[in-house]
Amino acid sequence: MATSTAARKIEEGPYPQLDTIVADVIKANADRNDREGRFPRENLRALAEAGWTGVLNAPRFGGLGLGHVDFAEAAYRIGQADASTGLVYVMHVGAAQTINLFGTDDQKERWLKADGGRLLGTYSTSERATGGHWWYNLSEASRDGEDYRLNADKSFTTSSGQADFYVAQTRTPGAKDQADIIFFIVDGKAEGIESRPWEALGVRANHSGGISYKNVRVPRRDRLGAEGQGKEIIYDGVSPVYLIGLGAVWEGLARGVLNAAVAHTTGFVHKDRNKSLSDYQAIRQELGAAKVLVESLRPWRIELAHKLDELWHGGKPQSELLIPLTEFKVHAAEVANKVASSALTVTGGYGYHRGPIERAFRDARAAIAMGPSNIIAREWIGKAQVGLPLELFYEGGE
Image 1 (cartoon, rainbow, N blue to C red):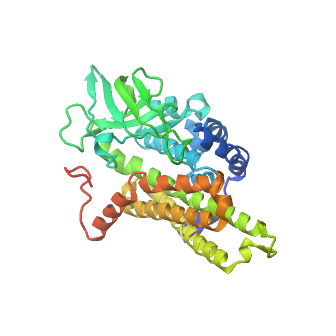
Image 2 (tube, rainbow, N blue to C red):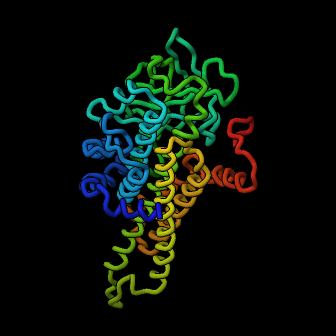
Image 3 (cartoon, rainbow, N blue to C red):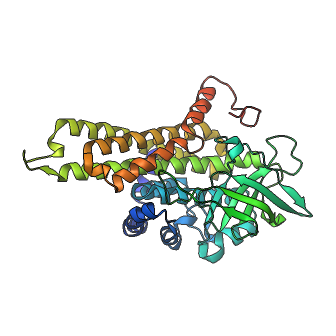
């Protein structure tokens, strides 16, 4: 019943303005941004001006005051047009939600409400030394009186060099163990931040390059939560919104590339036989199999997002859904890759040319690797299935 209510809410939801932005701005810019490796700033500005970058923020902090159902639906619709913009959007909303959950009113005023809610945020977590174990840091903050100094090399940070603020994690000064983690809100203009170029196979516009913090001063007022609270922030602040958003973007990519394949196969006619591509049974079967996969995601997304809202508003740990959300991310990533591959198959040379289908095929590959990678994620799921603890912060990783 609850899921049906959430689904009905989507059908009646506040999306016409969002759909216009997706069609007229995000989709229109997608191929150019991919070719040029151009950060989708215009897209994010349009979303911000419509309030969608503050989808989870309270109205008194300039937000829409909506929930995870609406956030995930927005990520899904954006993902249909451009996965790069979708990922930047998800990382921003995730960073903002972490501040919503663990930040002070002062932090919300300065980072979420400032400039009419147009400031762009992102997560900065993973380190090269620990690879896909993004939660496990070797860097450690130091003290500077009541303030802090951050020295860390982060291997992948979406919106690197482009964000107005970074929600960064590292070990607490004098950390007792690997779980003794601290989070900061780092001003993107702070002295000592160096970003590296982003050159990749896909999602070429999201600028997920490395970033270095070299003796960056962070005022005490921008410590997020308490010292040593980082583990809780990872489980209840970072992971849930990130995973539901990530899965929704890949669901959107799958839907978008399937729609593009259907449009081409129904519109292209073999003049020698006077048949459209869709007149061939083999093509229809390929499309049918892809459609079944795509349809498996929507009800699952809505159910998980609705449960996240219930936990959030009930003041309960959202980490209760960590494994189901991880399962959703894994399945969405695999569906995106299978459907993009099918789209390339049925559209032949047209799909192989640079354009929306070829771009979706490249973009979808990022879904498998993005943390937790599907390999690591399946290990999480398997451990939970047989009753073993995740042990994320013990020596040896996952």
